[in-house]
Length: 241
Image 1 (spheres, rainbow, N blue to C red):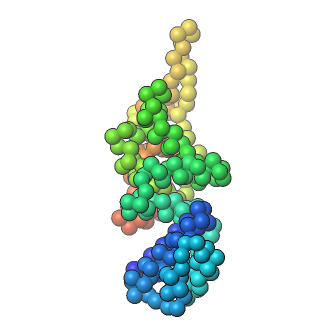
Image 2 (cartoon, helix red, strand yellow):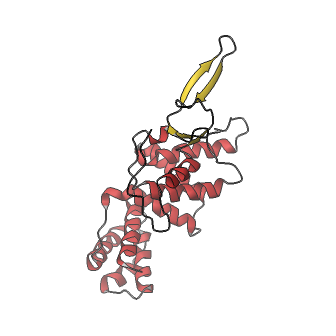
Image 3 (tube, rainbow, N blue to C red):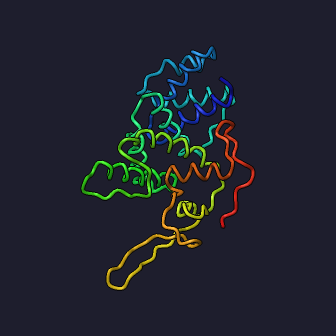
């Protein structure tokens, strides 16, 4: 455990309180510190509080942060709340589906762009289990891979959060015919029996790997030479051509 790990954990606790008033996370944080041989009077007091003592928990959490010289990045609270849910799923505290639906509700409550993709994903999950609705074939999400797909979506979210992406990235797709990243065009063919197609503006190909899907994000990372092992994006991003 190092200072960065403590800072990350503390920021998740703060986010859980701001978004869902879960001050119990502050108390759990104090116990975590004690288990790792970090103690002080303020840490002992925080660990001894109950969840109902919200104001006291917030006060002593601030005291502990000061002692440990931990800075809360308030501008990234929404990001850390998503990380909080993801880590909760990995720890078995909630299901992957519940995490997505929690973020769906947050988008409906706040209209914040950072939660938009989780609203879209919640719709796709619902469509999977509704035989009366046509599934969007642009997603690689299936009933069989749903939980793994969601977990990977959280991992990709954390990676893409710090990447400098084009404004229209999520409208783009990789053409499976020419391999270029393009914005596919919708066209209509035929006079009487009209056929609606999505084509590549470069080569007229009709099959794509979409950037808003996990598969498209994975492909993008490979293209830019991103190494997940060191979590260090490549210095240069390929040009959009």
